[in-house]
Length: 73
Image 1 (cartoon, one colour):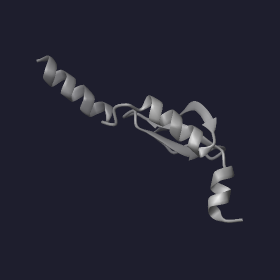
Image 2 (cartoon, one colour):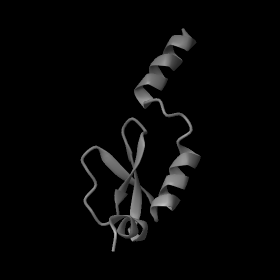
Image 3 (cartoon, helix red, strand yellow):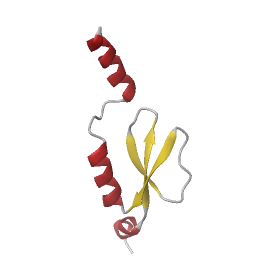
Image 4 (cartoon, helix red, strand yellow):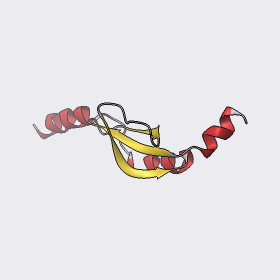
Protein backbone atom coordinates (compact mmCIF):
# COMPACT_ATOMS: atom_id res chain seq x y z
CA UNK A 1 0.00 0.00 0.00
CA UNK A 2 1.33 3.41 -0.93
CA UNK A 3 1.52 6.26 1.58
CA UNK A 4 -1.09 8.23 -0.37
CA UNK A 5 -3.50 5.27 -0.07
CA UNK A 6 -2.95 5.17 3.70
CA UNK A 7 -3.48 8.91 3.94
CA UNK A 8 -6.74 8.69 1.99
CA UNK A 9 -8.05 6.11 4.47
CA UNK A 10 -6.97 7.99 7.59
CA UNK A 11 -9.43 9.83 9.82
CA UNK A 12 -8.63 13.41 10.79
CA UNK A 13 -9.96 15.94 13.27
CA UNK A 14 -10.16 19.70 12.72
CA UNK A 15 -8.23 21.74 15.26
CA UNK A 16 -8.00 25.46 15.98
CA UNK A 17 -5.52 27.56 17.95
CA UNK A 18 -5.93 30.70 20.07
CA UNK A 19 -5.43 32.85 16.95
CA UNK A 20 -8.41 31.11 15.29
CA UNK A 21 -6.16 29.43 12.74
CA UNK A 22 -7.32 26.00 11.59
CA UNK A 23 -5.52 22.79 10.74
CA UNK A 24 -6.15 19.06 10.62
CA UNK A 25 -4.65 16.42 12.88
CA UNK A 26 -4.74 12.65 12.70
CA UNK A 27 -7.69 11.51 14.80
CA UNK A 28 -6.67 9.58 17.90
CA UNK A 29 -3.35 11.36 18.31
CA UNK A 30 -2.87 13.81 21.15
CA UNK A 31 -3.58 17.33 19.94
CA UNK A 32 -0.51 19.59 20.29
CA UNK A 33 -0.40 22.20 23.04
CA UNK A 34 -2.19 25.38 22.02
CA UNK A 35 -4.64 23.59 19.73
CA UNK A 36 -8.20 22.41 20.42
CA UNK A 37 -10.49 20.05 18.57
CA UNK A 38 -13.58 21.70 17.09
CA UNK A 39 -15.70 18.54 16.88
CA UNK A 40 -15.35 17.82 13.17
CA UNK A 41 -13.89 14.39 12.36
CA UNK A 42 -13.71 12.73 8.96
CA UNK A 43 -11.62 12.13 5.90
CA UNK A 44 -8.91 14.60 4.96
CA UNK A 45 -11.09 16.12 2.25
CA UNK A 46 -14.12 16.41 4.58
CA UNK A 47 -12.03 18.20 7.20
CA UNK A 48 -10.42 20.51 4.66
CA UNK A 49 -13.84 21.30 3.18
CA UNK A 50 -15.07 22.28 6.65
CA UNK A 51 -12.06 24.54 7.18
CA UNK A 52 -12.64 26.20 3.81
CA UNK A 53 -16.24 26.96 4.83
CA UNK A 54 -15.50 28.39 8.28
CA UNK A 55 -12.06 29.99 7.97
CA UNK A 56 -13.02 32.92 5.79
CA UNK A 57 -10.49 35.42 7.18
CA UNK A 58 -7.03 33.88 7.37
CA UNK A 59 -5.51 36.73 9.34
CA UNK A 60 -4.62 35.84 12.94
CA UNK A 61 -7.17 36.96 15.54
CA UNK A 62 -4.68 39.34 17.17
CA UNK A 63 -4.15 41.18 13.87
CA UNK A 64 -7.89 41.42 13.20
CA UNK A 65 -8.41 42.90 16.67
CA UNK A 66 -5.58 45.40 16.21
CA UNK A 67 -6.97 46.53 12.88
CA UNK A 68 -10.49 46.79 14.31
CA UNK A 69 -9.20 49.00 17.14
CA UNK A 70 -7.29 51.18 14.71
CA UNK A 71 -10.31 51.54 12.44
CA UNK A 72 -12.53 52.31 15.44
CA UNK A 73 -10.34 55.17 16.66
